[in-house]
Length: 65
Image (tube, rainbow, N blue to C red; front, side):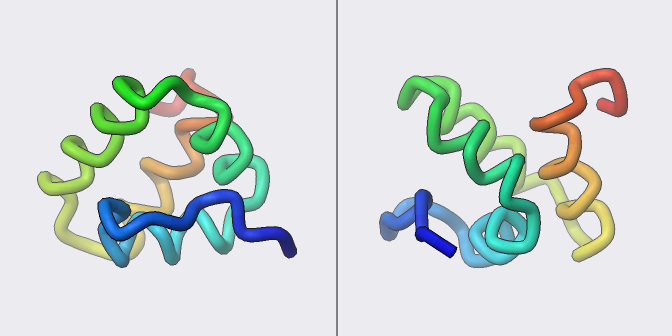
């Protein structure tokens, strides 16, 4: 799998969740930098793996947010 998200500013939990969800990784990679930063900032409020996976899935399907 091509790594579309590589950069030191990506929190580890977000990077791992994106690596497990290719569609979300592609959506995130296509976002403008300001939108990516907003996603990153939101992840600081997430406290569990399950919650992170659900948030990442919501990037592909915003209705579940």
